[in-house]
Length: 164
Image (tube, rainbow, N blue to C red):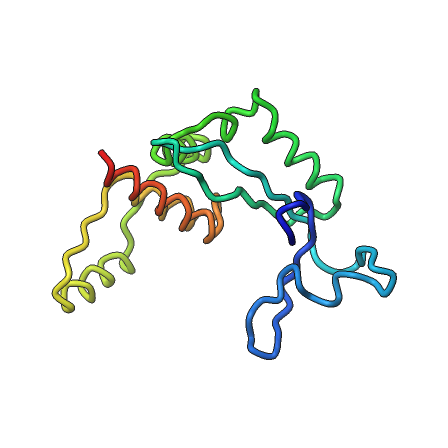
């Protein structure tokens, strides 16, 4: 996908190196270079307004849409200023709190968390997470956000936290 194509297709096919082919899968297009309706799902990309401190934010990418029209509609919804979740520059902390509220989620510590703390402690590292970092984990565990969004939110939040 080039920067000029806000709506595009991707799939989960893997190459010989076992990496996702994504938008580069040869099955996505037909011989006449039109999209193959039986392979892949539709995605959209959207440049977000600058974040805190006027820093450029990564492009928003969302996918899994069955039709091109559905991807276009979702993209246009986010371009609409009345769409509150992404329309104005918002701190990562506020986004996380809003998403958690919207999905009625809170962080619940699991046995895996306790095991991770023990293993981390054995390395001599001390890792202390706060409420927002824990909520990001809860959102991912509940399926409210995907892994890429989790990483982007966590990265943005840590940058914000460091700049305070």
